[in-house]
Length: 349
Image (tube, rainbow, N blue to C red; front, side, top):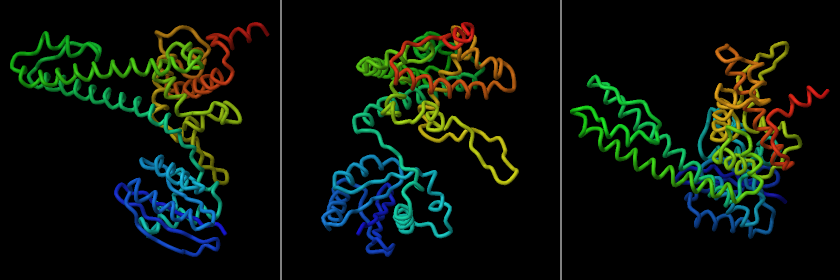
């Protein structure tokens, strides 16, 4: 007889609920969100001799908790939070009830939970390097904007320059009276720039360690950060039945709310990894921009929404989706990138 364990993960405590095969609650208890206590509880459940299915939502702690569950011998399902609206929209929501709802959903049909495939421990560790760099870049940007804002309060303007050169260039022309206020900001920006450059070198090194990344880097406008993030998030390039499935996976296709004769056109779903989606959109904006070399992707963007048109945003998203498909196909096949392959084939026919 199979048991079903629902785990509602909190930052401090986890609420657990065990159902038997008939759906009756066998046990409820609370455990600290720490490796030691959780591992002990999961191993105790596994020692009962009956198969156990553990269900938890994807979140900050889900990766290591799922690993503990698998190590204890439990079948583990990590649910997509978007697919468990019954939990966070319920009228009697509580951690105790959430754990029971997860167990019941897993008992009825695991596919209702849209199970998430977790990255390996190594991939998760490498992803933290990319996210760490992203945090540093956003922090530097906030400091630069603050420095510019402080200068404007006394009627001065800091010179326009690239973020990498901001600290050096501005330190040479700090407005009079702002030395005490701006110099600590400039020193911090300079330190952040050095740390960002160090992480850039580490990311380049890790990308070079992946021979298959060479083909993906042939696309002008796609760099080491995007390629490494793409490979870490996707994991296995053959996990999709068709390359086009990468679009919905990354939330780059429109949502749908069809009912009867009503089928409105909606915005993209923004499901999946938001960090990778943002990187791909940035690449698409360059590829479709005026300074990029000619390519099928650029021509495709200009057909859908020329620069300055109301459809330009749609064109950027469409290019982002095509770029994701292209990256996946290059990874799967190992073929060289041809910027105007589609145009050449059309002319040949």
